[in-house]
Length: 149
Image (cartoon, rainbow, N blue to C red; front, side):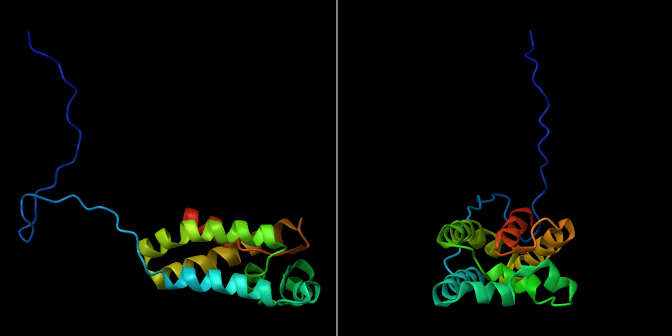
């Protein structure tokens, strides 16, 4: 009696003329240099450590619904660099340091920078459209955008 087997559904592509017929597996090599991620981490920590009057800084640069309504669109970007406290900064930096290098390696530094910025702006625009947080800070929107990138 013949043994019944399910069909092999894997797609096999013939090797191109420039490749050998025997292919070696490609393993992920972590990128040792990730300049955009390092710059973002440095900027977040430096701004937090050097800001002496956080209330004044938030008033001037945080994502503010009233400020955006007045045309202060820079707040869509600057709000991503501010953090409410040490715990908030730590969670965002840990998340960025875990996700950022992989995404930067996958897309390249320039595309990664554009993706991070666009995700941060989009997150702040969504926050503004929802209208529930009249004042907000943090890089969470940009980091979540990296995960969905």
